[in-house]
Length: 208
Image 1 (tube, one colour):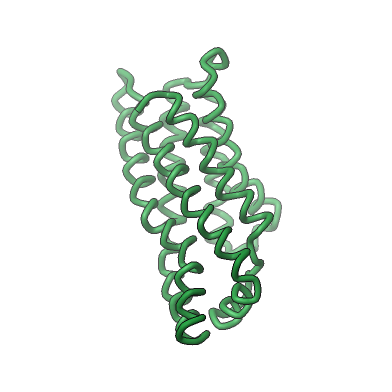
Image 2 (tube, rainbow, N blue to C red):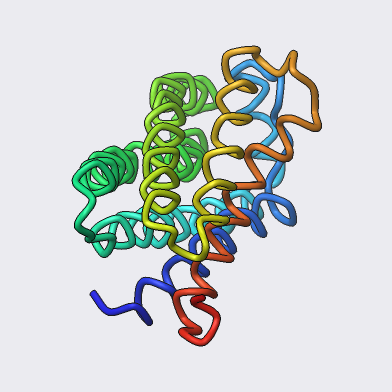
């Protein structure tokens, strides 16, 4: 896959994941599956549009990062191993993450036909796919380490990938106790770094 396609995927992925989440997503934090189902049904059209965009965003995001990892070939055996392992973990996240963000679509349709309890059961079952967050963090950390070892983009992008994924990991294991700042910098940070990497990939003149 050429750099233009990879760059486009790395730009579209974060945009289609983050923008719908901010503008269309329904805040269900701290809700039980039943409360979650009632909240998204109340704004079903909005939730469905957000879910569809998120699924496409997940496809672009993980595919772009996977092919970026495949493009990182060098004489450094450690860097190559890190990029390959990181890419493998990242692509493994794609079906799980797409299922997770798309579960509301199925839940809404089933709830409309069979009742809220069925939809809530689907949402409850989908939480098992949240484990992909760990795989994503580890995969992106390894990709960042490979970028740093190769001094790609002067090593800055890779280092920032590593820092943001460490903060995301701290946020997960602390269950949010580390604070909102850590959560925002961690999660929004690596989406932003993915977007920046996409721009750098598209504009060869910026690769110094």
